[in-house]
Amino acid sequence: MTLLERSLAAVWHPCTQMKQHETLPLIPIVRGEGPWLYAEDGSRYLDAVSSWWVNLFGHCNAHINQRLREQLERLEHVILAGFTHEPVVRLSEELAALTGHALGHAFYASDGASATEIALKMSMHYWRNSGQTEKTRFVSLAGSYHGETVGALAVTDIALFRESYAPLVRAAATVPSPDARQAQPGETARAVALRAAAALEGWLAEHHRETAALIVEPLVQCATGMAMYDPEYLRQARALCDKYGVHLIADEIAVGCGRTGSFFACESAGIWPDFLCLSKGISGGYLPLSLVLTTDQVYQAFYADEVTRGFLHSHSYTGNPLACTAALATLEIFRDGKVIERNKERASWLAQAADLLAEHPAVRHLRQQGMILAFDAEGASPGFAQRFHQAALAEGILLRPIGNTIYWMPPYVLTQKQCQYLGVQTLQALSKALS
Ligand SMILES: *Cc1c(COP(=O)(O)O)cnc(C)c1O
Image (cartoon, rainbow, N blue to C red; front, top):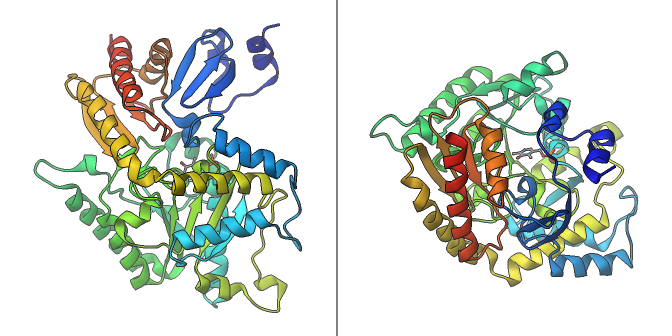
């Protein structure tokens, strides 16, 4: 049997209707190098989605590899209850410093959905420890995505997931998204943000007593189709949460780690949330790692003699030393490589490469936020995403549209030439997929 046949027989692939693989090939990847993925048959693909938004500095990055080898010879894992180790301490310190110590306490898990659930649990438990036991509900934005475990689905507003598992989920409320595509002719993105903020205020005024937290994806709601919005919404949301005594949770699982231009997306709005979730890029795309950063005020509300006032959440791989080491190596590259600075130029190369696309008659809402560039294909018929994905593979690029939204979310290693290649090949794939 080929690797492909063995995979279909034994592996249940994620986000996949397995029957489709009767006709669509699975691609066995044998090697990665920089932004390239090399397949068994010798073909290669430019990884323009960073392998589901996780890879920041290319595949098989020499620096991260070296740091992991060193750590591997020292300590691979140790229980984090009752024990500690250098990588988890240093990572927590460095992340706290990156928030200017506004968020000085780090709690760890392995996947993004768990980080969401930790933030939800911590928020509710904070209010309970503070005597406000009625604050047990959450509110999220229309089209929000915060993960797919049962708890995280409660704040995920993607119809397909919500409807399929509705009987298991205690769904949160949703308020209008500040998605700038909703602008009326002549209306600015900021005006749309203010409109959405007014709706949030209306909702909070009525429901703040039973509401623990508002959870948002700062600047870009990625999974719903790269809905981008004005940072003014975050400033308004911060002020409204303060006014009504509701926590603000920033899910920076996709938009953190430099993706939108600053290290944390919240920085562009000049605010800090009460909880900030990180995962995906934090380990450079090497190992599963997620974490929630929070304030001293939250931490202190749990600091007591009674066990029941402590935060009740544990995970066997909490703070895994190898994953933390990959994250520390990632932060070293950010510092030593002046990545945030250099990405400004790289983002402009993406914009230039997209000029080609802007002229295509089907391209709508061409938009960019740092290292995310997206557009919507107008007039695409059903099955477009799958057709485009296949057409792009034939052009040597890995892209997975979300519905009719095509996006680039590449690792921070693309050269100007590779950006141009991405533009040219995307245009080819678009023409093929629309015909
Ligand atoms: C991917 C993602 C998650 C879930 O992370 P997993 O590691 O896939 O569980 C949560 N929130 C956002 C914004 C994401 O993009």
